[in-house]
Amino acid sequence: MTTAFREPHARSRRRWWWLALAVAGAAFAAWAKVRISHLDTSTQATNPIIRWEYLFKRPETRSELWTRTTEHLQLTVVPVALGLLISSMLAAIGLRFRWLLTPITLLSGFLYTIPSLALFGVLVTYTTNWTAAVVALTSYTLLILVRNIVAGIDGVPSAVTDAADGLGMGRVRRLISVELPLALPVILTGVRVATVTTVGLVGISSVIQLGGLGSLIFTGYNSSYPTKMVIGAGLSVLLAVALDLVLRLVERLTTPWARRRVGA
Amino acid sequence: MSAEVAISLSGVTKRYAGAATVAVEPLDLDVERGHVVVLIGPSGCGKTTTLRMINRLIEPTAGTITIDGTDIRDRPVTELRRGIGYVIQQVGLFPHRTIAQNIATVPTLLGWDKRKVRDRVDELADLVGLDPELLRRYPSELSGGQQQRVGVARALAADPPVLLMDEPFGAVDPIVRARLQAELLALQARVHKTIVLVTHDIDEAIALGDRVAVLNVGGVLEQYAAPDDLLAAPVNDFVGQFLGHERSIKRLSLARVANLALDGGLVADVEAGIDAARAVLAKGHGAWLGLIEGGRFAGWVPVDEVEAAGSIAELEPEPAAAVVRADSTLREALEVILTSRSSTAVVVDEHGTFGGTVTLEAIREGLTR
Ligand SMILES: Nc1ncnc2c1ncn2[C@@H]1O[C@H](COP(=O)(O)OP(=O)(O)OP(=O)(O)O)[C@@H](O)[C@H]1O
Ligand SMILES: [Mg+2]
Image 1 (cartoon, rainbow over the protein chains, first blue to last red):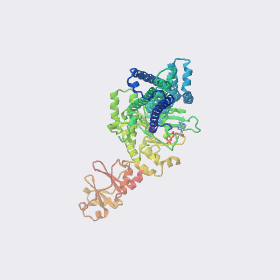
Image 2: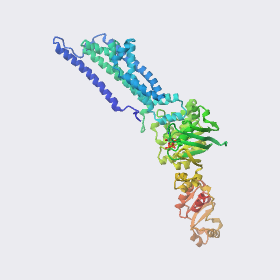
Image 3: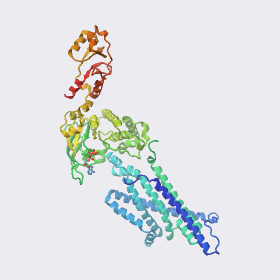
Image 4: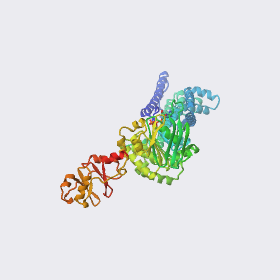
């Protein structure tokens, strides 16, 4: 067996570390920018990292943050959902016709390697900004999703599929009531990774005027207003963490059998 | 073809794509209804292949398989399989389904209503000796032996007339295996299925099979016979070697005391008096005389005491230690004979009524019939 049935703990913990590091990095960047601008123009008033009045005094802030977050959420959920749909079909084709699996993986791997800004740039000449962004983001999810769906289904013990066949389940029946449920932990791990990655990528979409938390960061950067950068980055991280937690919860709820063990 | 035949293989051949040799050479095999047929042979001889051709998990390269006279290809494959219980070697329970759901697999596929399924699951749990408490658990929460039982229950769920079992007790220790074997026999006495069972344990084959098919590499059928006939007369060296050195000992486990021609032996009735007792002694050799009182075996008395005694009432018989029943195996009889001072086992029925004696000589004659 090449694929671990369940994600090792060490790996998921490492991802949390990356998130923490990203927050720290964003905060440091904001702080550094302020220090530098402060040094350059000694006449400029001090520019603190967090301007509390932005958060608490300004009446528009709330709706602005809310709008940016929902934009971000939408640009994450739509591509991941589309990606899951397309990956399922690709995986189904690859599992049915094994020789197609390599080309499918190569293609999704190729899509994954295209720099995101370049892909946006090309796509946007053909369609609207939003569609271009969704298409690009979707294409990035395919590699990990296809790989995990295939690995998940291949990871179902052959004794189990054998039993399903021997007891007279049809092919579709076996897929739906045996293979998919058993592959679910691996598939959901893929969905989680794709989601967290997409949350990060959506930051770029603000370049083509689609808002999201990235636009907070960019306007903050351009107007030397670090508060917006910090809040944008912080909310982006929070969003990633929240989605990750939601998906973990889904996994727990859908795989009660994987939790209970002998000795209970 | 006799009406008794449930499963019939004729000229069944399997050559795997790309394989240099044939996995199963043209094989003819008839399985009678209600019988347990055991396929046995060295690893890689095609036992699993043969078994899986019966439920079409593997398609034969040539030949025909019929169940109850109809070609298995005449029915949709899923329908065929739902009518054949299948116990796979590695148990293969569905880890994400509870034990009850596992057992209910085929009834659910067949669309039985919920009540009927639930009743059937309870019935099966009882049949295979599973604590109902376990039904709500997941397979990973059961011991190996319990899982094997669930595997058997799942195969029996829709009451299929035919059962295919691939090393059903392969994954458990010898003690649990022996118990499961005994339970399978008890179960079979109640359900009368036609069973094809694969094993590579000759003792299991002898214990479970009504007939045993010994296969050689390439699916060559070397001998197909009842266990006792197999042990008594292996057709060639291959079969002989496969059966092992202790063929006679193994036969002892198959034959029962009731199969022997029991004689009374050196036994006298108390009522008949001392002279009659001495007359019995004159007919045979032995150091002990058995006494019968009111149809029951009273005990053994040393021969010299009988000679010396003035009357039977003076004698004080020692109770018999070596006692067997008519349905005891010869192996059990031998065991008690070896530990008895009189070298004789006393046969009694459940009421204690005397039925005869068994000696080493009688056992030896029983084997050379
Ligand atoms: N899917 C397959 N493709 C090619 N060859 C196979 C395949 N399955 C089995 N074989 C070959 O066919 C022969 C018979 O295999 P089979 O599994 O029936 O043996 P077996 O008697 O059940 O052995 P064991 O006691 O080890 O389980 C072996 O030589 C095996 O290598
Ligand atoms: Mg085998």
